[in-house]
Structure formats: C-alpha cells, structure tokens
Length: 79
Image (cartoon, rainbow, N blue to C red; front, side, top):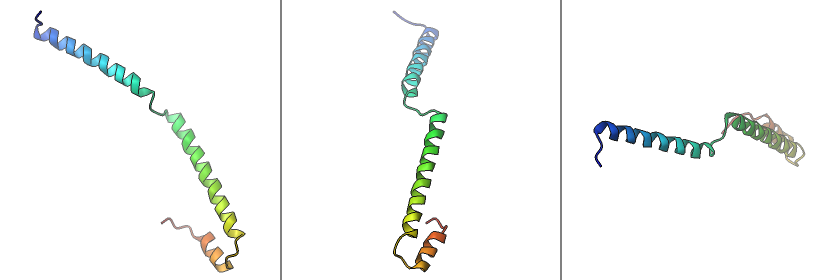
C-alpha cells in the first residue's frame, strides 16, 4: 500500500490534530480557572491579614520596652 504525498500529508495532519485534542483535554483538568485563582488569592490575602494582626497583638502585649514596640509597630519597610 503506497500513499501519495498529499495522502501522507493529510493523514499526518489528521493524527496531529487528534493528538493535540487529546493532550489538550487531558491537560485541561490540571489547570486552575481564573475564578479559582482569584478566590485562592483572596483567601491567601485574608490569611496574611489575620497573621499580621496576630503578630501585632503579640508585640503590643509583650514585655518589650515601649520604644522597641513603637519601632517594630511603626516599621513599614519590606526586607
């Protein structure tokens, strides 16, 4: 059985398209949708806010000198 160049090209193209569709369908389950990403991002931001408030409360109620507390609580730098 021999194929003409046009038949070989068309069959190769068909196999490529089918393979691409299968791979796309298989990998699509592994990705996160934009809405899920935004929801996770908001949840993470809220968790960071909670931890930040907890640490500030620990500093306020600690036995450190007042000047050191003020220095820590007023520091806005990111290192």
